Length: 623
Image (cartoon, rainbow, N blue to C red; front, side, top):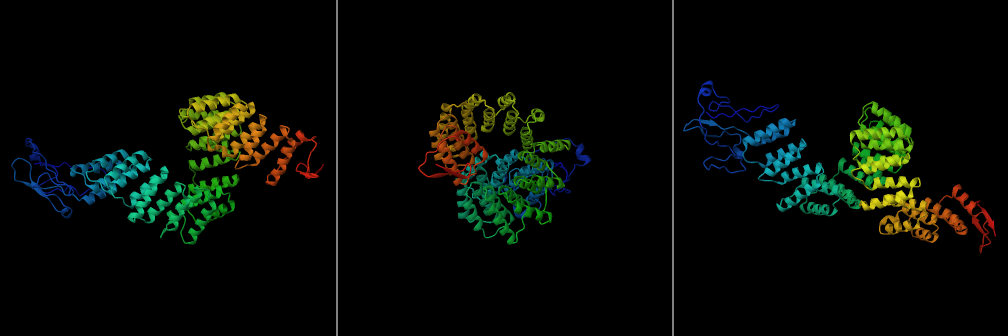
């Protein structure tokens, strides 16, 4: 007799193999003693989605899934019949969903392969989702490729898998294949595509997806929220607000998406307005909403509103967790209240790496390097994992107080753990060694970095320029250009400072010509560095030309121009520019006054007016 062996695996008891008198689960002792017979080709029961190879064998349909099927025994010429294994495709899919671990899931997949010699769409879809649930994208793709019939659910599941792991190129290839197969999308597929377009800033494709949503009338709460996210990610805040305003219904997710969009674009007060409207309409914010609003408070320096939100958290109006605590610390740090941030940190019942790093970074950015180092040492004693941002923050703290010993110790840990490949850590190490005056170490770090970006090059150029190594700085700029790295505004500013210290107007004009070909000339720091370079080189006319063409001027720009006039002997122009500087609302400090007085104190004024206002003394200088 042909016998089906039993399959056993943990926590799975499917009603798939039902023993019967005609088809026992195990053979009897007498049958085990019989000599083995040659087996005839085995027949299998096929899914209702596919036709049977044997036309005399009825295909199983969905209506009779629970009814018993029978066929002639394939052993010899015996007329004995047996009941075929009974299974329900829906219950099989249910078992796939209920698997709690990957080993159990693989066992269920083995049962599916054994019972179904051809793939069934919705069972295959559940297998794809199951593999993605256990982060096995490659196995999910194998199931997808083996499906003879793919529907929109199959495509959506596999697209979501590639979206979650960030493999956007493969997702785009799948999307092209799906379009060639003329698959009509549904709302969930459009949500996935909108997330992809938002993550890749693909504005044109996202607009086409939006058109498909409108044309197919797929608008619903989830799709509209995805549209708000897409437009905000691509920088079209107006379109995002229009989609949000036209939503017939909203939930906490849609409100939070709009608030986050305003925060990301630096419009904190609009975020506060939407947050207030959300609460007025009876929606209760979740932890993501609160974190976004706290971020807006920090960026807008809205300390009062942040404290009100903190009070609401303490009263239990919002659920407090480690992420809200970290956001509270960041808000206080950005508002300059480092002590309040430390109070929040000390009162947190649980702290993760993000919380520790936020506090260390806050100390380092606020100039409290010693406190940052002490907290980092406490973090190490508690064996809390330090991520890349933690290392960057502690190196910043070491550089701020020029603690070379501890910085080298951190460098040793970096080398030991092989995290030097991180560009941000490498760039911070270069900055740290330059800050401590160890340029040989900085150069070694730059040389050993497997990948160098504009930040790492600029850190080295700035380090050389800050202590007067102008020739080396300009040589590094040349190497950077040969390496194919495009300079940014900070690179140009550092290189121009090197030219100013060398008083090399030739190199300065060469950099000026390069800046003219980019948008960096409109940057106030680049413009100020150009003026300083020309003034130090004695080229007052070119400095004035740059000053007059600058779209924005800050206090540093005015100071450089006034002092440059005075040091180059243009005392009348220096004093007139000081008067104009005050009219523009900029404060003339003692340093500027002292510099102009020392350079122009004995100058005799020649003016057509009887008197002129002098901002040096606040009095009238008589002719």
